[in-house]
Image 1 (cartoon, helix red, strand yellow):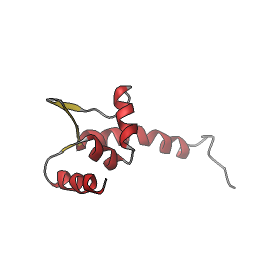
Image 2 (tube, one colour):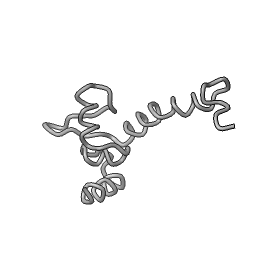
Image 3 (cartoon, helix red, strand yellow):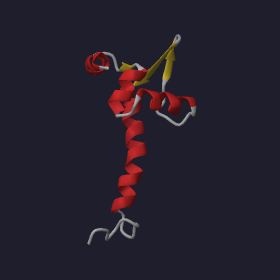
Image 4 (cartoon, helix red, strand yellow):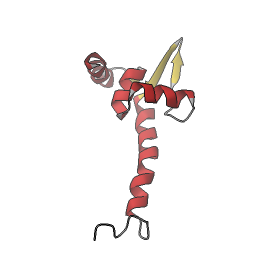
Length: 87
């Protein structure tokens, strides 16, 4: 897996397209989780380059922001269920 991490770092400096292994590492998921999300059509957008699946870094960033921000917003909104916990 270390090789995939190195390739992801290289890809970010060069090509904006990542393999599934690289994309999974980039957004902090297991490769199998990202593959399952792709099959269920609930993961980040991907592209087919011939028979190869590729993820664009900008798509991963946008998907991560859109899917990660809802939890943070609901926790910080006034009147949310998490307000006042631990006090």
